[in-house]
Length: 348
Image 1 (cartoon, rainbow, N blue to C red):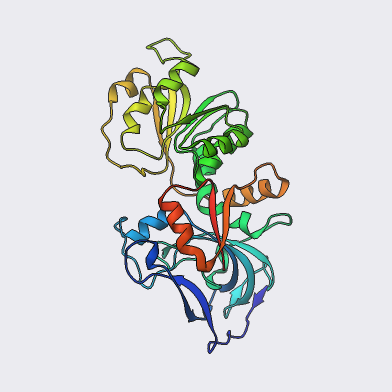
Image 2 (image 1 turned 180 degrees about the horizontal axis):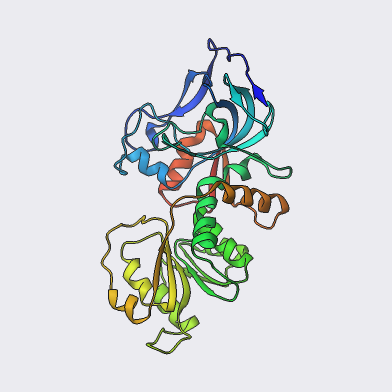
């Protein structure tokens, strides 16, 4: 099907959250911006929910090394309704009014919220090819929780890590969007899960997600807890330790994780929030024949699968809070202070 829709009325302006320099949450402002005009192959989406991610505070602070196109808008995730198509846009799967989720990664341009102004705005233009239909039964906030965090977790746990039923899985930093999904996916296939977090309220939420064992890293040592629960890995004596460790923290957790990774175990990583160049101990890697598996981003097929799981309720995205666009600074501060469990959603 070939569609061409008239331009939106560009004398009207719409709201967006923007920041014009690096800093903290106090730099976020709700401003009026021009209606987006869709180009060839593009569509305009009315954003009903936008999702914050771990990279948003880093982009705001200017700590990523990426060049930020000011004025910048946070959020990479979005869900909403198609309101217009640009000229000569071909589509056989979409029509105006359809509910869609946005795939944040745009080939050749980068990612919304990083190198492209993000999704916390009333209207956004995006390639029609980046729009994923939302099935019945999935709300906008749930859909906006999926792409970056849940898409990353699915690729890491299933496509790259091949986590299987019966395996012992340790998830470090399990209380954010990626971590929650890792716990959910591991339990979905029948793994035994140990998850770490800080604060009793977060540990209780991890238990509700199905974690078999929880570790409060404010007062407990995950290395000791793994050894007490699953035994200490011993040279040429299989049976101790975690078969899989999810570690996107890095820093001083990296070498310590190797100490409790089982013989033939797999360390999965998709980031390094506490430092990307930690000291390590290669002896464990060769002695216990461990495998380090990197995972980057997500696939379109993975996003579609996650929407199916959300529709049939076999995996429900964890939403920490829904807030108005005007409270973006509150949501950003919570994210910085790590006072979030799951995904924080803004409602333009």
